[in-house]
Length: 444
Length: 86
Ligand SMILES: Cc1cc2nc3c(=O)[nH]c(=O)nc-3n(C[C@H](O)[C@H](O)[C@H](O)COP(=O)(O)OP(=O)(O)OC[C@H]3O[C@@H](n4cnc5c(N)ncnc54)[C@H](O)[C@@H]3O)c2cc1C
Image (cartoon, rainbow over all chains, first blue to last red):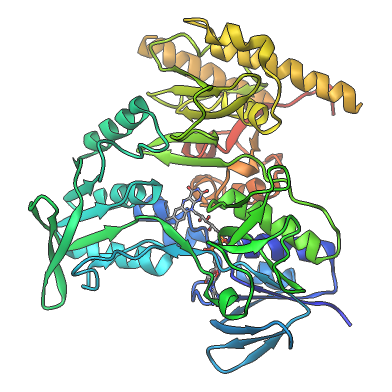
């Protein structure tokens, strides 16, 4: 009998797992269950749907017939309960689905706003395509929109709304944008560009309540008593893993579903991956939540290999977050935020300084001088690089990603890097190439 | 750099890409948004290459650079084809 794999969730983790399972086991039954009526699409792509860069149909990486060709069954429906003893899933529609091995890839959802008026029509979030459609429809009617939240999603909504709505207000709780991750200059670059795009920034501004008439939003009131009239309020203040199914099935749950380095939960034959999983890092012994697309793909693939029978422990790579902030391609590698070790030294270089342009780092050919703004910041520890932020020109991104991920000993270039006016790009580029050659010669 | 010099530099880089380059993805940066495929003038599904990690070695590719320039995440670049390695 072929093995029957059931995956709850048709997101990045679920689909990466399904395609990996198929490549490892040509006869298995693979069923992917989703409560999203649009199936699998690029969730980060929703940002570019909002700005109008792509039409809705472009969000779907696989056509239905491609999934059929891979013999992957996409099943529409919501799982209400799992019986890990009987190996059964109860669906909302009353059906029962049985499984031999189950993957929970239920993702996460936006944390709800908890303030008076949050239930009014016109208060929106951005988790899925349904939400994106609602935002677009709402923006057409609203003369002004208000966006709340400190991270990437809030900023993406603000930029999307700016393309659709004359007055877009973006409220920042603190002094500057994304202050727990970006440094002051980076925040200032992003804020300057948002302002230039026509978005109105309100610093040190928190919502107290949302006002409405006939059930629909008409304004927000801030904690300092300011009133901003608007027909749309978008809230993106963080995400929460969707753990209810796991919890009610008796799995061990902390902030996410706890899994070991093989993605096994506390129940036999039940695995979890992606935003919903809190994964054990065997190097540190700690468990971590990663709510990132690339992590969801990696984890989905790794979980699938383990479900198919290989026992390969997952070594968590340092966080890699590639995004676009106010039109600037930005890569955040490893530990870059606040609360860092006092022993770390930060090196930052902007356009006015000489860190770019000492010849090709790789054999890549640069056709466009892509960006008007270019900046790199590295966090240098005693022996290793622990993190980096690369904005604009991305040619240093890959070298830095590898040097951080492999914890390469950089003591030999540390002093040169820290010297004032150092040619960072040349130093890193040469060092990285030598290191790669060295690794290649060792692995033969 | 002056505007003309810039344009000239870009033009030369374009010609170089056309002769010796192929569009190469870094899959771990890609979020499958599909902008690359949408703007490809001859409908190559560049996004699929960014999923599998395969460079775009189709002879149809014009190496126009549209996908490279449009990608919001810096997933794509022109890689020199190592003529003697193949
Ligand atoms: C607007 C936006 C922009 C983003 N931008 C970036 C970015 O730039 N970079 C980045 O790294 N990450 C980004 N992310 C985060 C990234 O999309 C997630 O980390 C990733 O999608 C997680 O994948 P997942 O498979 O774990 O979960 P999801 O993609 O959330 O998929 C979960 C799936 O589970 C299904 N499901 C849940 N519960 C049930 C149930 N009970 N029954 C049936 N089906 C169920 C859902 O329908 C869905 O199909 C962004 C997210 C959003 C919303």
